[in-house]
Length: 259
Ligand SMILES: Nc1ncnc2c1ncn2[C@@H]1O[C@H](COP(=O)(O)OP(=O)(O)OP(=O)(O)O)[C@@H](O)[C@H]1O
Ligand SMILES: [Mg+2]
Image 1 (cartoon, rainbow, N blue to C red):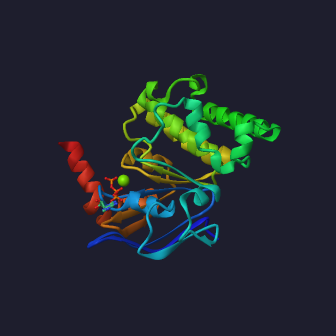
Image 2 (cartoon, helix red, strand yellow):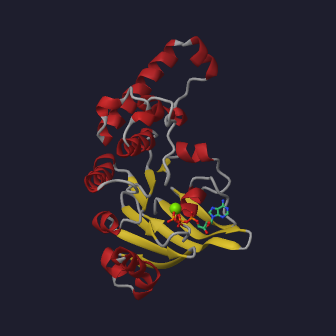
Image 3 (spheres, rainbow, N blue to C red):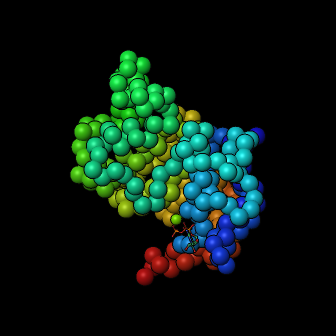
């Protein structure tokens, strides 16, 4: 059984069909990419998966269970985490607090326990801190946990977002354009990090990305969409050689690069 199965997913906004009968499967412990031109519907797919948008029709099965009518925090609790195309950190909070905020789905102590600081609540807070520290260490910014998020350079803010997603202890991690805005060196470290997330943590990765160099290096399989429709699926080579993909997407990128 695939970890994630998207079946005939359609999402309409009035007359616009942002996702159009999309079906795909993501196997456990794999690294998969979703590519396509601007406005192709990639982020909409993630928004459906994470419960932000309600699909017009179709289904999405995560570990065999339908995600339809499931609230975003329940989906997170079920083991799906994401990062956003545009950074969404709490800028006024510390790095540590941002990462810890990702973990409330894994905490059990209730509101009154938090107010009266029961022993159980203190033990839980210690555990949350440990996990958050460990995640910051893993993404490579162990020394900045008390900084305000807004005072970090952009590349490090991205890392905080990855740590926050990892802190939810997901089975599937959705990354929406994680390389956007990163320099060459940061991209190389990102490739290494994605591989480590999969290899060391056994977390399946589903990635949206425009940086073809990165996609080609890391993905074992790629799905290509255009106007919400899947136009190709296959290995890096198969997709690169597919005339439909070249026409809809890769060719355009090359033309833009040439400008
Ligand atoms: N909430 C919304 N209301 C109306 N239209 C929307 C909404 N969200 C997305 N769209 C439209 O759906 C289409 C797909 O958008 P989406 O953000 O999924 O594209 P994308 O493939 O992620 O593009 P990019 O590569 O630029 O991020 C676009 O035409 C977009 O304008
Ligand atoms: Mg997008």
